[in-house]
Image 1 (cartoon, rainbow, N blue to C red):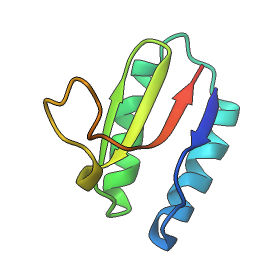
Image 2 (image 1 turned 30 degrees about the vertical axis):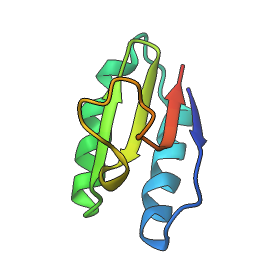
Image 3 (image 1 turned 180 degrees about the horizontal axis):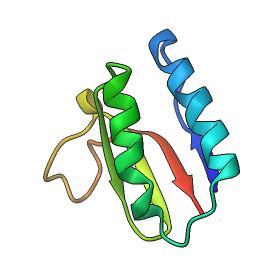
Image 4 (image 1 turned 30 degrees about the horizontal axis):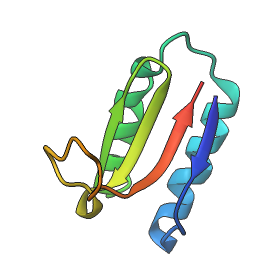
Length: 85
């Protein structure tokens, strides 16, 4: 799995993404949807407010303040990171 960070990280986010990068380099999954709940739990445990969504081959991570629910065009949504298989 590959983690791609698409924005500059805030100081409070660095440790989360360090842990997540290590995890994604060691895990093998046939479906990314199985990993999304763990990412949500890890972010919440570290006090981070993210919107985490997924499909079978990717997981996207948005800062909640950069995500507009219901915006299916994604024009207003700025993705923080994506994990691909």
